Length: 438
Image (cartoon, rainbow, N blue to C red; front, side):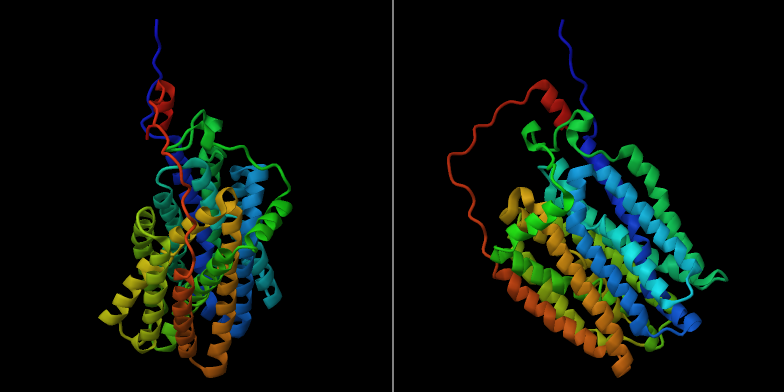
C-alpha cells in the first residue's frame, strides 16, 4: 500500500507574508498622525513647529536605530513574540497621548514609546521574513511587504485628518490609530510563525537546507557584531549614505511637512492629506514593481534612476503649492508615490549580495541610517519653516541630496558571482514537492 502526501494549495510562506503585511499596516497607522496633527497641537498647546518636529525626529531616529536590535531579537526570541510586543507598545504610546499636557510628554510618547514599537517592526522585519520564508520571489515579496509599511501610514492620512476635524479632535484620531494596532494582534498570534520547520514546510522555492538554525547569541551582541563586520566594507557606507538621504527626502520631509506646507499656501488640510493618501496608493504599485525589477535588473541602476528622478521632482515642487489643486501637483504626487520606497528592494538585494546570512542585521543598520536621515530632515524642516517662514529651502536641499545619493549608489561595486560547474538538478520527492507547492 502506498500513501500520497496531499498537495498544499497555498504555501504557508504566503500566509506568513500576508499577516506580516497586516502587522506593518497596523503599526503604520500611527505614523500617519504627525503630519496631520502638527497644526491642531500648535493651536491647543501653543507649541512651535520646531518643538513638535523634535518629537517626530526622536520617533524617526528610534524607529531606525531599533531595527538592527529588533532583527537580532527576532533571531533570539522569534518573530511572533517581537511583533506582538511591538504592536502593544505602539498602541500604548499612541493611546496615552490623549492625556498629555506638556511637550516633554509628547517626546516621551510620540518619540520614545511609539518609536521603539514601530521600529521593532521596521524593514528589519521585512528582511527577516523574506530571508527565512522565501528563496524564490524574494524581491517581489520584499516589495509587497515594504509597501505595507509605507502605504499604511499614507492611506490612513485622510481618515486621521477627517477624524481630527470632528468634535473628538486630535484625541479621537490618536485613539483610532491605537485601535488599528491592537486589531492586528490576534492575527499575528494565530498565523505568524517563526520558521518553515514550525509548520512542517520548507522555504518557498527552496529546500530544508535553506531553513538554517537561528542564531542563539544576545540580541545586542549580534547587532553590534553585524555593524562591526559591515563597517569594514565600502558598500555598507555607500548604502547607508544613500538610505540616509532616502529617509530625509521621504519620511523626514514630505511625510510630516507636506501638509503644513500646503496649508501655508491656502490648501485645506483634508485636501493635502488626501494627496498624501494618493502617494500611498501609488506606492503599492511602485514598490511591488521595483521588487519585480530587482529580480531582473542591476539594483545599482535602479537606485541611480530612483534617486535622480526624485531629486529633480523636489526641485519642481515649491511652485506647485497653492490654494487650488492643479494637474501639475497631481502629477508630482503620482510620481512621488511610485518612487516613495521603491529604493528598498534593490537596497535589500545589495545587502544580501554583499553580506549573506548577516543581511537582515546589516540591513537593519542601513535602515537605521534611513531613519536618522528622516529625523534630521523632520527637525530641520521645522527649523527652516520657523526661521524663514517657508519650506522652500528644505525642498531644494533635499533635491540636491537625492542627486548625491544617485551618484553614491551607482558607484557600489558588484560582488562577483561564485564560479564553478552548475549544480545538477534533482527530482524532488513527493513530500518535498507537496510542501514547496504554492
